[in-house]
Image (tube, rainbow, N blue to C red; front, side, top):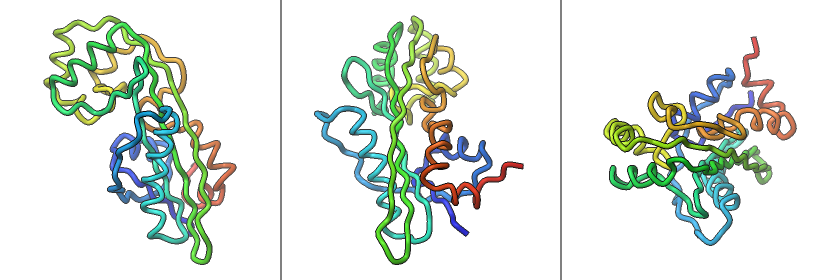
Length: 202
């Protein structure tokens, strides 16, 4: 049976794949996530997703490995996970009343016993518009620690973080961390045998 490996420790990606009844196991990649900030954001997010998938794929055979990475871009700069509460507050104040872009890159690697892997990449992006955020609300959210493991210092799926989002243009799940719609359609073309073996549609 063809099996699937998610090369990510993100609980949000795991939950999204479970949502579509996909059978898979998690094997977290520990590769270096540094990048050249001069590269376009679409290149950066694709490179990072590829690096994670390739790290796991090179040590396995007869599997499909999924790598993914999500970045937040505002005013031509990438907003990474905040290093401390003060940085989280600064990011959220910047995003208040503004529109930013969330990009998720996905890399798919099919591995074999007797030949090099086959791979496929894609990137999805969604525009997110925040309403004006009250400073007290930002403080409450940051004190919850919820923003600290998320690019851009917020999670659209969080109970409180969701209240900041006024409008989105694109796929909601891309903002959460994994574009299910695009993933399913890309898989039907690139690796339909893995869907057949690992997806319960009943």
